[in-house]
Structures are given as structure tokens and as C-alpha cells.
Length: 460
Ligand code: NAD
Ligand code: UDX
Image 1 (cartoon, rainbow, N blue to C red):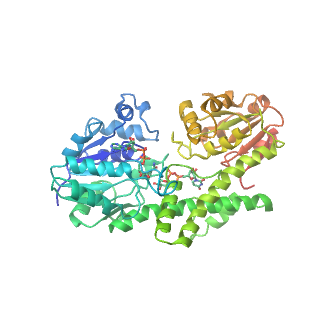
Image 2: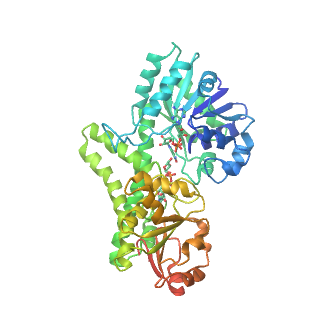
Image 3: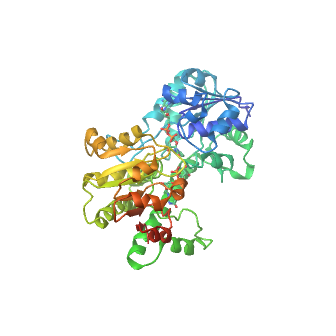
């Protein structure tokens, strides 16, 4: 088996950056180069001040500090990095298609194909090409065809190695993964990648399968996780009308070892770049094979999630006497979950959009998301002009400024710091009656009601 001395990763995003940083940290004898077309992103990865890394993840700064400049490099020179590598990870984005066939459902593979064509054009020696991006099942066949038909006659072995890290806990997940999954056909290529991971992952947690099982397992893992969230969110609505409490129900069912306690936290709805995109992709694949019942089954996970976001916004409007026009609503949190600066598909975006249609004035505070990202997220929806978004939404850097004079507070992200605020002081500065709509079940009902808040939480 060929020893891997140089690894290149194409795509320096939320997956490529942290994953390669850990691979480099744990394999000091392997040179790891992460390349991206986005110069600003690469500059941020190379920034001397680790506060400026483009991805915020607890513990990432320490890993980068360990390896960067030693055997970890970030560059925009894609061709050089491809040329020199023994193993090339493809970790580019695979968003939902916004045009043509499969629009709104299928994964857009144009970035993947561009990578394959570039690898084929540049490579002058044999390469192992690793799919790190999440891809539709059977993409490896398309990659192989492009590489073999447009290349310089060198050999390419394709592996599937999907990533299971969750944002906010990426470094913990990478350091101590439940499992690493490697799919492939060539045993020597598989073994080469196993060795990279064996530097820190116990052998029994490195699973090997055929290519198609590996590709499909990633979509299925995300679908199962998201399905649990939608299942408990469906029950949260039932709790609200029956007097049951969804946290108590979660606890009661989670003690059953067959069900398990994780991923049963009711919320304003799941967000993030993966769940919706990957389920839509799964639905699209099932439909394309004519499996209507399978597609309908999984599509319901998304339908319920959209319903959960909409009903959270509707409840705010109804509770506030059926009008939020001109009222100040403070948003605590904009990221799709705590401990990340990522806002992709965040529930906050859709709740805000719903309230803005009713001419509410929203003041947002998030500890890690900058104002320009918040406006970009709203502008992207195209519901109203960018001027109107700026007129109706204010972004502040101090939470107390957001809460000053607010008619209501909506908690959209479960940042720990929100718990530590002086809620008695906040109520004093708010308009009365002072409403709290807790989309994360973060605060304590007894405490808030004893201070005098009108407190509403999902599933109670
Ligand atoms: P991202 O958008 O943060 O990063 C992708 C990067 O690839 C971008 O910086 C982009 O500029 C770069 N890129 C695109 N085409 C390129 C090209 N031809 N050459 C060089 N660079 C190019 O995306 P991400 O969140 O890191 O996700 C990447 C993949 O990993 C997706 O398939 C996603 O589904 C999957 N994934 C994501 C997560 C997650 O938590 N974000 C977890 C598991 C898997
Ligand atoms: C997910 C998968 O967990 C990870 O394995 C995969 O690699 C990428 O997609 P991520 O989206 O980063 O990770 O975060 P995750 O912790 O799964 O949360 C996704 C969304 O579900 C968040 O909005 C979160 O707040 C929400 N969620 C999660 C709930 O509402 N309730 C829960 O019990 C768990």
C-alpha cells in the first residue's frame, strides 16, 4: 500500500477547514493543504489572529495553532496542490439546485464536477480521490467517468468518506467520532485512508463499506436525525393543546433504551446547511426511482419543520393581540444553533420574515453573527426590498440594547449566555405586558413568570 505523504482538500469551508486541521494535527508527518477559490476565506484561515478564522468552532483555534505552518497550509493555488497530492479530498458545497430539473430538491453537483475536471486536467500521477462532501448515491460513478475520460491516463481510485461532524461541536466530534465511514472498491486505497484516521481513531470505529452504502448512509443519517426533531416538534404542538409538557414527554420516552434520549429537544425548528438539503435530496432520489411512498414519507419531515417555524411566528402575532405592526420584537440569536456563526437555513430567518410581513420592527442580537450576514439572509429570500429589510430590522452588539423598549423577546438560538442575563432588569426596560417567546426552551418558566413576564415556550 502506498504511504500517504501529501493530502489536498478542495474546499476550505465548515467541513474542509476543521476536518483537515484535525487530520494535520494528528498526522504531523503528512503535509495537508486546504485550497479554495475564495481568497478572503483563505486569507482568514491564514490570519495571524486566530479570532479571525472564517469558521467559529470551540477549540478550532487551538488545533489550527498546533498545525498551521508546520504541516497544515491554506492556499488558493488549487492546481499546485492537486499536482502534489497523493490523496485529494473534495469538500466543496453541494447546495440544493435553484434552477432546471430537480430545482428546489436535487443536489447541485456543478462544484463537484468542476473539481473532478480540474483534478483530471492537472494530475500527472495516480491519485486517491475522496468524496468528503455529502453526495447523492452513485455520484462516485459520475466522478470516475469524468476522471477516467478527461484525465492524462493516470489511475484514480475513488473513496466515499462522508463527514458526520455537527457544527458547534466539530472539534469534539472530529477528535472522538462515533465512527468514521469509508466506502470504496479498491482495498489498498481504503487502507491508505484508514491509516490516516488510525492516527487517532480506534480501528473498530472505522467502518468500511461499498461506495454506494457509504454515500447513501450519510443522507440516511441526516434524515433519521432530522426526523427525530420533526417527530418531537409534532408532539410539541399536541402538548400545547393537551396540557402535557414536551420536555417531560421527551424524558419519559428517552429513558427507553430503544428510543434513546438524544435529539429529542423540541424547538422552533431545525436549521443548518445539511438537514433540509439532504432530505430534499433523498426525496428527489426516491422519486426519481419511482418510489412515491418513500419520497412522501421523508418529505413530511420538512413539511412539519416548516409548519413549526410558521406556527412559532403565528403564535407571537396572535398572543400580541393579533398585531405586531410597528412593535419592537427583540430577537436573541440568529445562528441555526449555539456555538456557531453559521446561519444557513436558520429558523430565525423564516420567523423574522413572517413577522416582517406584518410590519414588525425586529432588533437582533447574536453573539457571533455580524449584521451584514443577517441582512444578506433576509435579502436572499427576496420577500421585500433590501431597503425595507434595513428599515425594519436593526442589528445590535449589546443584548440589553436589543431589549430596551421591546414589546416582546423571541429566543431563536440556545446560546448559553442568554440564561445569565438579568431578566428582572430586562423586564423593567420593556413595554408591558412584557412577552417572552422561547423557541429553545432555554429559560425557566417559574423564574420568568415570577418576575412578571408573559412567558410562552414550545410544547408547554
Ligand atoms: P462551505 O460552503 O462552507 O464550503 C465549501 C467551500 O468550497 C467554499 O469555501 C467554496 O468557495 C469552495 N469551493 C467550491 N467550489 C470550489 C472549487 N471548484 N475549487 C475550490 N474551492 C471551491 O460548505 P460546507 O458546510 O463545508 O459543506 C461542504 C460539504 O460537506 C457539503 O457537501 C455538505 O453537505 C457537507 N457537510 C457539511 C457539514 C456541515 O456541518 N456544514 C457536515 C457534514 C457534511
Ligand atoms: C447535522 C448532523 O448532526 C451532523 O451529523 C451532520 O454531519 C451535519 O448535519 P448540524 O446541522 O451541524 O449537524 O447540527 P445539529 O446538532 O444536528 O442540529 C441541526 C438542527 O437541529 C439545529 O438547528 C438544532 O438546533 C436542531 N435540533 C437538534 C433540535 O431542534 N433539537 C434537537 O434535539 C437537536
